[in-house]
Amino acid sequence: MKIQFISYAAGVQLWMLSSMAAAATFVCSDDIDASAKHSEAANILWSQTLTYLQGVREILTENNGCNDGPLAVVETNDGGGNVARQCVTKYQDVQKAIKHLDSVLKEPDAARKCFDTQKHYDAFPLYSANDDIKAKSTVAAWLDRPTLVAFYQQKSGELKDAGLSLANDFWAILQQSKMPYYLKTDISVRQLPDLWAAVGWLPFYADSEKAHNVRFRGGYAYAEVMGPWGLLRIKTIDGEPVGAEIGMTVQLSDTFYPYHYHHPQEFYMPLTSASCGDEHLFFVAQEDSALFERHSRQDGFYIDADPSADLPAWFIPQSPNGNNFTYFERNAIHAFNVGKGCSNQPSGLVSVWGRTTARDNEQSTRLCEVVEKRSVARNAEPHSRYICNPTKWEY
Image (cartoon, rainbow, N blue to C red; front, side, top):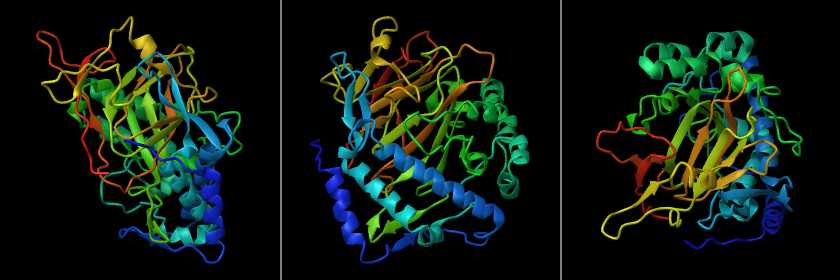
């Protein structure tokens, strides 16, 4: 697919000139519940939501390797042993996301009509981690979401153990977050405790056996601040679909998020540093990468990484102050490997997360399938053998 680049600065200038004449028109999702919109707790949550969006806008636009934004990792190994990077604001989908964030931040009162605390949200369950967090946050106590502790108490075995580790140590893991040195707006739990405590968390893979790795299934959660299923649900701004989907993720230590892909483009900014220096690793490569094994008579391709030769060359460390802002193009194959850490403290990987085309085409995340091996237990590890069949979506 050929990617078209236009000048970000020129695009923003044209948009600002065209938007000076009239206020933006916000169209909300149909299921916004405004019944408790202006309670004290809702006001706190809205204020911290705006700060979070301001911080994400800063991540996307502050000079960090490029004149108008971050130099993003787009491949950790380009097939020739090199890390590939690109100025993220050259992508049109990122430009549009920034434009829509600007609209919200410029006209917060108009945007707020699309804000929903999700106190009475029934599309799917949303959780707080545990009751101690509710005691720390008046907003979380007011929302009184069910807890991940109660959710995982109903599970069994390693899944239960991992889920309870994540749920009980949730706040301690979040507290290890730190903003990159070059950013001014702190959007970590240290500055926005009520948002991180009260936003609806989702144990996305808990009941997904396709994810294979049971500790990962119990040790992963994400939350959405803005987007089709988040606190701020804007369908269009001035008639243009809003694709920005922005939130955060937490992945417990000693877990592997298997190789996967999806249609919407995605970005991550890690907020936690590795205690050992290199246990927070990630991988990304394009679907046509020379790293993958292809057979002319079969669909898709295989991932079969040698643990001693390939993995050190494929995966690179994540760190808030490393140049590791990441941008995943459509169908890019990516994975996250979070090691055990070197301290006795609970640990994990906490990240700012976002997608840019959340209302375009197919949104589901597709996992590459582990290939069954005779007499070998099926599991999802960095060196397992996988088959990937990226969908040829309509663009």
